[in-house]
Amino acid sequence: MIKQVRILIAPEKVDDPEELQLLAAKILKRQLDEVNAVIIKKKSIDARNDPVFHLLCDVYVNDYPRGDERRIIYEPVKGDKKILVIGSGPGGLFAALRLIELGIKPVLIERGKDVQNRRRDLKMIQRFDVVNPDSNYCFGEGGAGTYSDGKLYSRSVKRGDIPKILKIFVDHGANAEIQVETHPHIGSNKLPEVIKAMRNTILNCGGEIHFNSRVTDFVMKDGKMLGVVTNNKEEFTGDAVILAAGHSARDVFFILHKRGIRLEQKAFAMGVRIEHSQQLINEIQYHTIEKSEKLPAASYNVSYNSDDKAVYSFCMCPGGIIIPVASAPGEIVVNGMSMAKRNSQFANSGLVVSVSEKDWSKYESAYPFGALKFQQELERRAFEFANNTQKAPAQRASDFAHKKFSSTLPKSSYIPGLTSSPLHELLPEFIVNSLTNALKYFDKRMKGYCSDEALLVGVETRTSSPVRVTRIKDTFMSPDAEGLFPCGEGAGYAGGIMSAAMDGENCANAAAKYVSTY
Image (cartoon, rainbow, N blue to C red; front, side, top):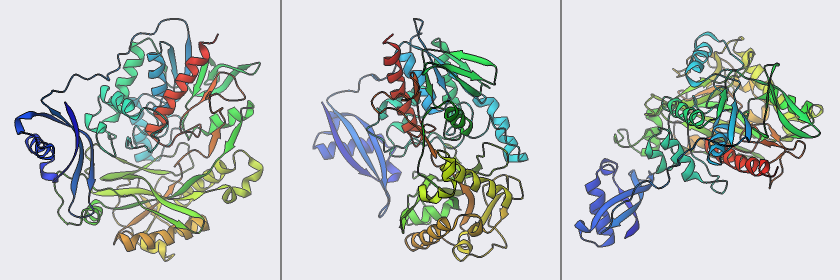
């Protein structure tokens, strides 16, 4: 017999199986020897008072856990059907894995390098201000999430099978804890090996992967998508195309537009990264100077409405660092990442403001690229403020709130270095006003959030794609190109690793159904 119970337990005892067994027996009013196993299904922290763990557990009463029944056995694909998958981020990888489940050969086409060789280009931007437009934090095997944290939290519970996605990560080497944590996280030092294992699954089952293959055109005939051209010379054709190029693949958007594929500009958000000491965030969230070793580095989630604008934290990285994620020379974009242990002395988060059509109205003639042009302009201005380097423009939060230049800057995790800059002059006025109001509001609730030691680093602009590639709701297919399935963040249908992975599976299902009809 399996009973499900909720257990509150002190951090110091959360890893003690005997304590869990004792508490479960007490809750169920059973003898201790009747409880044979307690399996944690969900784990979260309640830090409103003294921090405790909330556990949702399966308790085996006079029964025992059985073997793992969810593991997917990937078999070599058979038959002559093949589907091109553009991009090897979570959308593309999970689309490819799902196609293998369905017995269809995926041909994965990636503009960047594999995870190992990609590291060299990350070092070039970190140390020498050199941005490779095909291999960087945004482009390459695993996509933008590989070297920028690997957070797996999603609210998109109706879009797909979240437990299945997490299990696939675990089966490829991720820590099994991600299946129970409320905010699961793999870490940028662990995720590359997981991605490599996924690659091996695809190859071992007969799939193909082509790195250093940037899409430069599409092959179309009579309104049907037949394939792609890469690097202006090599042609790949298949029975369908799943397009999961990522939200920073601006060149792909322009090629689609030229080919008559319908695009829409869409709302997104822009702002800055805010960085604090992790010690401060721990003290605020856990109400104590010395936290238990069993408690993770504390995180936070804040939001505020300023006039008609939403201001909110984005991609919060406890125990993390700020990284340069420009995808082309002449721009500055920042993001955050954490290693698996989240043991940096810093905490950072995007602090962004919603951006809507009226904000990019001066680019109205550039439709459907008005939002993209507005985004791009801010990234280029940031580069100019940084004296044409990757030394990002930065300002103390308290100085920003009072529109004062920071004569000095606090220590930061950002490796390329910082340029003290008046962010209140760099950012659009509506973003400045919204951030200023929000910072004052957050500081009242989290004392020290807006202080001399809090640092703002610009600019955070790649929260989501400013362009959506139109698709038909029920078929996931473009209305303008039969056999083209826009997918993931780059197509405007996802907002993170999990939602992109689920969208990849959905597009694979739709593409497989399509190719089975002829």
